[in-house]
Amino acid sequence: MAEKIATREAYGNALAELGEKYDFVVLDADLAAATKTGIFKKKYPARHFDCGIAEGNMMAVAAGLAAAGKIPFASTFAMFAAGRAYEQIRNAIGYPHLNVKIGATHAGITVGEDGATHQCNEDLALMRTIPGMTIVNPADAVEARAAVEAAILHKGPMYLRFGRFAVPVLYNKESYKFELGRGVNMAEGKDVTIIATGIMVDMALQAAELLKADGVSARVINIHTIKPLDKEIVLDAARATGAIVTAEEHSIIGGLGSAVAEAVGEACPVPVVRVGVEDSYGRSGSVPALLELYGLTPANIVAKAKLALSLKK
Amino acid sequence: MEQAKKQQLAKIANQLRLDIVEEVHAAKSGHPGGSLSIADIITYLYYEEMNVNPQNPADPDRDRFVLSKGHTAPALYAVLAEKGFFPREELVTLRKVDSFLQGHPDMKHTPGVDMTTGSLGLGISAACGMALAAKIDGKNYRTYTIVGDGESEEGQVWEACMFAAHYKLDNFCMILDLNGLQIDGPITEVMNPTPHDQKLAAFGFHVIVADGHDFDAIEAAFAEAKTVKGKPTAIIFNTVKGKGVSFMENQVGWHGSAPNDEQYAQAVAELSKN
Image (cartoon, rainbow over all chains, first blue to last red; front, side, top):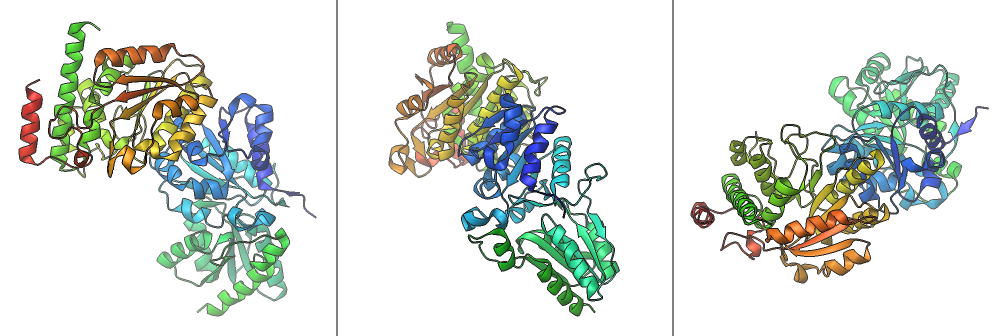
């Protein structure tokens, strides 16, 4: 069985590792132990600034740091980054296109027991509406580390989405080439395409195996960069397979599913069926129980893939 | 302060007031009241206090200025034009669709604007970030921000104050424009944010209270601020909203409305006498 690491852990490790090579600073809002920026803080205490429980201030402080030439990573839970501080991100970071990296952890329902107030299923939707915002949702620890380095090298605002729960490592650290804005073909197939992001990429691969057993050939694509969306890989999949299923640990409204449906609808209309949190709030529970309850499973991806196939002309 | 210098600053401030009235009249919208109340303070900042260079607006060692009460952009644009950051002919393009002078300050398109502001409470936080950057980089520049008294009702202003004191930002100077009025009426009636002096002191600031229309007092306040070590300074300037235009002074209605042609002519006539 593959090694399991939470992407937030990979984020903290990446900051600590890359701190030597690059000159950036890290802000947190009293969650350094949970967001894992504490790993960086331990190594570089003079470059880590706790802002206390004041996320709006933290985001605008980050904007000021960037305006003065620094590269700040601002971290808190996705709910309090994209949610609480939406307006600060929009007006102080997005509008002036400042070089701030938002490291949002504990995204989606895999927060688990803390429940709905802390399970942000809306952050991708919120961040997608901000012009010029780059959004990355890594699938595993290797991709998370690569995304952090890409964020440092990219000039402009970026939203990085990390999870609390340990997930399988899919990529080889030595050989994986991460390219911002480019989707990754994970498996070839001709009948249907599963386009997944974040922790759903692993489940999409499992779903493709299940479909194969049923005689369905499924292509699997990992979209780590939600914005700008790799339309080329999406439209190519639409043309080649004629049916698409999207899978994300996020509301089916406004995230990957919406982005794909928008791109496909405007250029190559084919059925797009979305797997995600279906316009509801989360709740407390163990992660496996929640994934099952909200249909974030290989089995549900299989069911939705068959639905997409049935809609195919 | 020498009499000659004082007269020179008063003359510049008066020109800024003429510019403010002209900008807002040309735009047929905008915020004259709070622009006029900070005209003397912003004149002193740009002509006496801050190290800025219109020929090199992005100088990494320059002092920073953030107009946290971004709606009073007409005052900022006036002083930037007078200093030569951009041609003063641009002032009358304020708020027009092809102008780089947006209704609220836009750092991406206006030379000399250090931070995009307008949404109240954000500017002071960003200014804290700039002051922190100076500390991290071991640079000597100072960061100034003007916060509105109405704006001080925003919770984020106090988050920023906590931050400035916590990180001992003695290179940070918060300027509070205490003109007493906001859109819906006197600040004490809408949502009383006073007493600012006691609150800011309790938040860990060195607090100075001064007359924001007296250049001797303004000079003394900024000089004192520079001597403070280990904590940020807040200068509370008592000001008159609409200062310099008789019919706008202390009138809530002039917070965010433009003079018509007749009112504009009267304002210009009054200011031209100075």
